[in-house]
Length: 436
Image 1 (cartoon, rainbow, N blue to C red):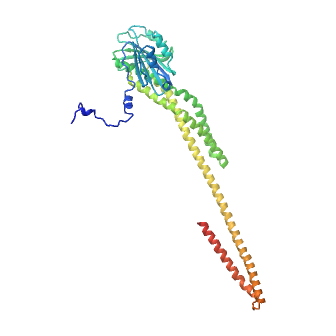
Image 2 (image 1 turned 180 degrees about the vertical axis):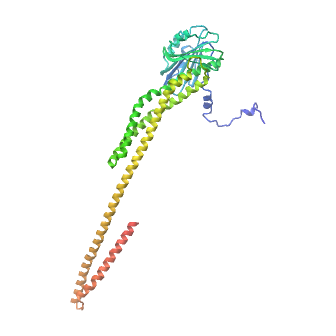
Image 3 (image 1 turned 90 degrees about the vertical axis):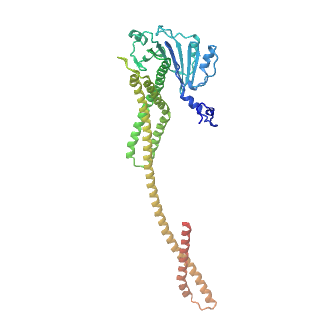
């Protein structure tokens, strides 16, 4: 048997699935970039930028005089001297991350000192800014931030903090905007560059996905009055269904229910994507928090506790709105089906009544027909007997001894019976042809 290192190991099937390489690449998308400490990280999340044309990362490289190919991949990294820029394309948004050098012992309160070209590049990023983060990393040799520094850095706001990565890093934030960005402070206690890069990526993901998940909350608040009004309207229509007993009223009620169902379906078309996306983003936030492996810093809530108290209620509101819309759709469908069944039953009753009336008319027509047939027999017999009388009278005139009265008397039952039998056979023949 040939070994793994033999030349036969290079043999491959002739036909390869066209998506094979893309699927393999998907498993390795968004690799964390190793990050040395101390450092500063700026992250910008642009909503809608995923669908825009252009290549901002390549534009940055060209502005810095560097050669760069088009970065059409989902994840692209560009190193420009001491700076590292990362561009990540998602389904609804694109993130741009800058890894900046920071001198040990430098002030964490000062704004990052960016070259004019880099500032202009940030200002020209496409899309609508939905989230921005300013993340400062303290190296293990730097002094831990004291209470006074934290108060100045976060404006005396209530802090959220945790000891992450099994105690190898402390994280502080308040999740509030300061100069347009959310500030995060990390004190490294011995992370490797790879661990530091993964920690930064998870914290940035938490902020990005948190804001994207919250996009569904204004929509939930907007549709809530419409949902309540529809629920009340369907309740009133259900009450009217109990008392309605007239066909025209049922038709009117059915039209009103159909109108309410159409409005519910409009909601069901307009809202599911945003609510579904919120569920997905919330799940990602929860997953990233689990990956932090948080431990409590005495006296401060952890990031997980903060999200549970602040983000989870908003997500439950969105889920409730989605469930109410689905419930309305089911109720409207059931009511329409029930009322449509009642209308169908009423129509069947009308049809039965009409059929009974038609049967009565047909019976009457049959009786009239039988009467007409009797009259027809009498009339035909009368005229036929008259002809017999004329014939007998002619024979008598020719010398044939024929008694006119006797001939007429004998002819009457014969002619009447013959005519009656003929009409009866004709009617049976017509009935037989009608059945076929």
